[in-house]
Structures are given as C-alpha cells and as structure tokens.
Length: 605
Ligand code: G6P
Image (cartoon, rainbow, N blue to C red; front, side):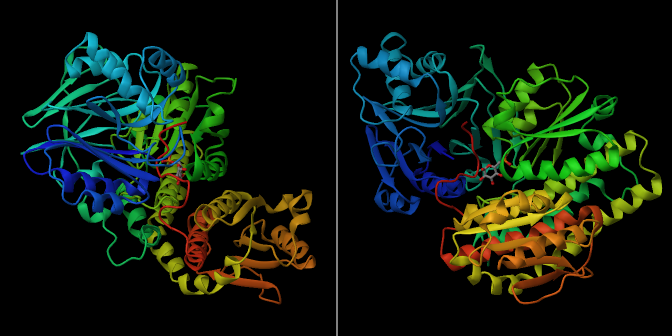
C-alpha cells in the first residue's frame, strides 16, 4: 500500500528517495512522486513505475525531500491524484485514509481553498496551511492540524525555506532512520537500510521534526518524548532478488530456511514452555477456555488450519474470523478466550482494529503472531510469537504462511500440554516432526519442473476449482487464492464434500479441478468426490502422497508428494499450489510480484 520516504541530509537525497521508493514497491502502488526543496518546491509525479520518476528526477539535487508511492483509495490512479499534494508553499505525502475528509474539504472550500485532486491528502495540505495562519511554526501547525483528522495517517511535510521535515503518524506505519549526515523517515525499514541501521519507531500520535542535526519528537499528549533507538536486524541481502526471476519464486524456495529459522526458537527442546509466547504467557494461557483467531487473506487461511490442530490436540474450541467482519459484528465476548492475531506484516489495519475491538470487549489475553518485529500488531498485543521468514516482498504470501503454520502448531502443542492432553513421548515426536519440516519441504520443491509442465493447461482457462477435505480444506482455499492473486484466473476453494451442493454444476472440460489428496482418513471420501468430477468430463489435477491410492488415468493427472506427514501435512501440501500459481502466472506473463490492484501491506480499511 502507499509508501513514504523522506530525507533531510548533508548529501544529495534524491538518489536515496528513489532507492527508498524502489524498496517499497513491493507494498503495491500505481503512481509515484516526490517533492524537493531548493529552497523552493519542485514537485515531480508519474503514473506507473518508480523507474519513470527516476528518469524525471535524474538531474535533481536537494538536501530535503519527501517521496511517495500511491495505492489509489480516493480518486483514480492519475498524475493529478499522485502525491505529494501541495498547498501554497508546502507539500505533503500521506499513507492511510482520512475518514472525515469530506467534512474538512467542505470547510476548506468555504474558507476559499481550491482543490486540484480527488484525494483526502490534499485536505491535509490545506488544513496545515490554514493552521499556519494562526500557528506560524510548521511543527506546531502540524501538531494542531492532525488533531482535526479522524482515521489513519502517516504524513511527511516540507515547506519552502524551512530547514526541516515534519512527520506524524496515527494508525499507519512510520519509522525514522538516524544517520551521521541526517535523518530519514520511511514506511518500513527496508527503504532506509541503504543509509542506516539505526531506527526509531514512532508511536501513534507522535509528531517529529527532522533536521540535519537530529530529531525532536512530541507525543500524543503534546509534550516532548524520547523514543528508543533500535538497531535493525534486517540484512540488506534479505531484500535482494539474487539469482531468482521473482521475489515470489525466491520466497517459495526459501521456505526450508524460513521454517528452520523459525524453529530455531525452540532449539533442541524436547518439551515446550509457554514462555515461547512471552513472559506473561504462563499466566495468560492459564484457564483459557476458547481461542479466537483474527486475520485477513492468507493469514486467515493459516488460522483455519490452526482450528483443526488446536481443537484436535488441545480440545479447546476455536473460532476463526476475518478481521474486517469481526470488528463490526455484535459478537459475544469471553474474557477467558485467547485472542490470536495472525499477520505477516503486523500492520494490516483490519487485523489491528479487530484486536483493539476484542480488547475493548473485555478480552485482554491477546497474542500476536507476526513476521515483523516492532510492528503495530506486535506492540498492541500482550503476547507475541515472531516468525522468522525474513522480509516477504512478493504480494502473494508464501513463506510467511508456512512459518505461521509452524508457529500455530507450536501454539497447539503448548495449549494441549497445558490442558494435560499431551504426553511427553507424543510431544517429543511432534517436535521431531516439526524439525524435519525444512527437509520435507525441500523434497516437495523438487516437484517444481513437473508442476511447470502442468501450468500451460491452466493458463488459457477462465476458472478453476480447488478441493480439499478436513485439514486440507484451508489449503484448497489458499491454493485458489494464490492462483487468483497472481494469474487473475477466477478460482474457488471448496471442501470436497460440498461439491454436490453447488460447484459440481460448473464442472465441464473447461474447468480444471485441483485436488489435495493426502493419505489420510478422508482419502476414500475424497476419491468418491473425484469420481463425481470425472463423470462430468472435468480435468483433474491431483496432489497425492507417495502412498495414496490415487491412480493416473484419462482426465486424471497425479503428482505425488514424497512423504505423508500426518497433522503437519498442510505445510507440505500448500507448496505445490504456490508453485502452480507461480508457473501459471509466468505462462500468462502477469506481474507476479506486484499483481494488479493488490497491495502487500493493507494499512487502510
Ligand atoms: C494483503 C496481502 C496478502 C496478505 C493479507 C494479510 O492482502 O496481499 O498476501 O495475506 O494482506 O496481510 P498480513 O500482513 O496481515 O498477513
């Protein structure tokens, strides 16, 4: 989603701004722009890729600048709607949504301000300029102006002849990077690693003044505050593409390392301690009588798998809710419920709001399961488990999903143990099985060439159905989501038992049907479902286990995963579906890492 980079430094900041925007491209955007001070304003904007903006900016030199990638919310993607937005002598970039923008806009129009875009951001620019009439200091004016805003924002503001940049955040990510020659700000750390590793994470309500000499931060209460500096542990290599063609491909193939790194958190332990989820976990897990999982997108699918695990192993009822639905539903709170927020980015606005909603409903036992340390959701929750997938750049989530599954399995085991339902030998066996996952996933990745051979048969189709049963039903949903996200083929995931209740009507030779057929208790039932498809002339693509009794025949194509993996089988079975979506997108020639209309980190509702 929108990305911000800002810089005030001794050096020429233009290359830093451009490189920063490139690092944020993965978040998803449709236009880009920047504003520089020299000491008057120069604004450059373009629809499309940052590379175009780079060409426009190649002869520019400046020591102050703000830059932005825009993902359209208010107004179509166009140059006039691209940020920065200017009001007189000041310019603003913004990430987030201002909910009361219509009311503010009417007020500003009545006061004589003219608008040149359809955005909510232009309202912020005019509001700050109007505030400057009464509060002449830029930092103080921003502090006053933001009190009028309802919604989420991270903003950066520059003004002609001023030797400073003012930034503010509330509900959207923004961090500062402190270097020897100046101060930088960005939506995420990846954009600033080029200049520094010293980061300061701003809190909601903070307004900061950046100059070449340092940073002054004022908190929500209006008084100066100190925010701790953090050395970023992110490696610059982690965001390099290396020898891969796409980030998604790299991230699929990194899954063995991502799982191994995440499992390092338990070391060689034969037994789990609740402390894995935070110092307060023994107390907060005690007496948990239900689990509520909140998430969006792929993370929601991880939650659906976890429901099977936690209910089976720990005997605790689990509900899994799409965060954007839960937050607006009149649900029945249970104070003894553990609330688990799953989010790769830790910044998804709906997931964050749903956790706050749960807490406001009287449910303080909150656990964040995230891939980004210091993210908003991590800071919001009482407990945390940080997956170690490394930065995930491709919009379609892959390694974050499998590491979330590993973390959720650890949670299921921990709750099972607490409930007295996990004997030590069984626990040791499950842990050994988890530790073997990186090797097992590596073997599944070896199927890539066979999956690539299937891809052309999907590329000319309009629709596809994914079937799974039990634990693998969420994997069918995830396989369908991957295909639609990056290849734009309409795909539906279905529990195979539901086939006769609707989707069978769609099956003909134009409808590829992908089935997940592990060798588990539901295999025979699934085989009956497959026969129903075959009888309608459907073309079937089956991912079976080495020992599944599913045979290749006319209209039935079978690929076998090397080993059957019991309860952890979903972690393996999702991998070929990721590869299938990737290969189909390659054949179709879509933008794999930045699919149209989608954003990596959805920081608005
Ligand atoms: C966006 C991304 C998805 C992701 C979802 C939830 O839609 O494109 O890949 O699954 O957000 O994101 P989160 O960071 O909360 O896991």
